[in-house]
Image 1 (cartoon, rainbow, N blue to C red):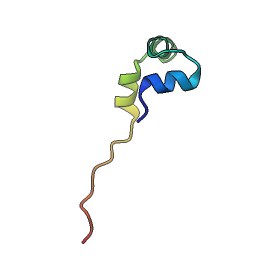
Image 2 (cartoon, rainbow, N blue to C red):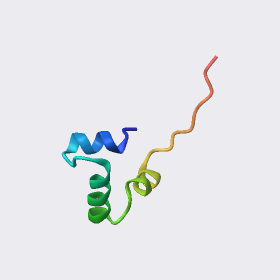
Image 3 (cartoon, rainbow, N blue to C red):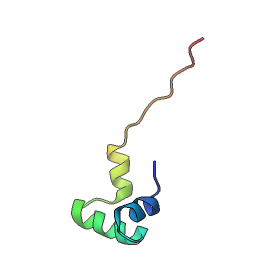
Length: 49
C-alpha cells in the first residue's frame, strides 16, 4: 500500500495534507476510513507441503 505522501506527489496534490483535504471534500470520508472500508483483506493461507 502506497503512503499518502507518495500518492500526493504522484497525483499533483503537492503534500499529504492537501491530498487529505481534497479527498475528504470530494468523497466525504478520510483516506484512512476509505482504506479500512474498501481495501481487500486477504487471509494468509498455510503453506502447502
